[in-house]
Amino acid sequence: MTASASSRLASEHINTALIAICSNGDFVRDPPLSLGGRLLSLYETSDSVGSCATLAARSHLASFNEIAISTGKSHGAFFQPLTVWMDPLRQWIASTNR
Image (cartoon, rainbow, N blue to C red; front, side, top):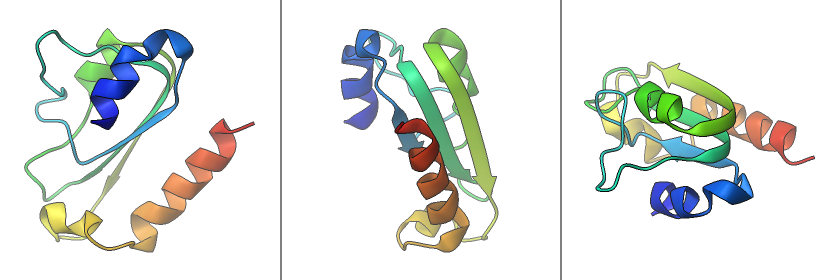
């Protein structure tokens, strides 16, 4: 829902954080999503989902940051508020909400 809503509001330059959502660099929808504003992508290296680089390249972004964490917990790494992903997310939110 977050990616779809952000795509619909791309011209508003909404800042968006996507957590463990992209496969093969993209989040596939028809029509393809295109985001605006700033994008943060977080993913776990042992998960089947990963980078959002293709989605970012297709979008009209002010900035794209991506953080890969390696906990070995696959998608479950995001089921708990672990500092390994919560701290970078908090820092990104603080830096983009000026």
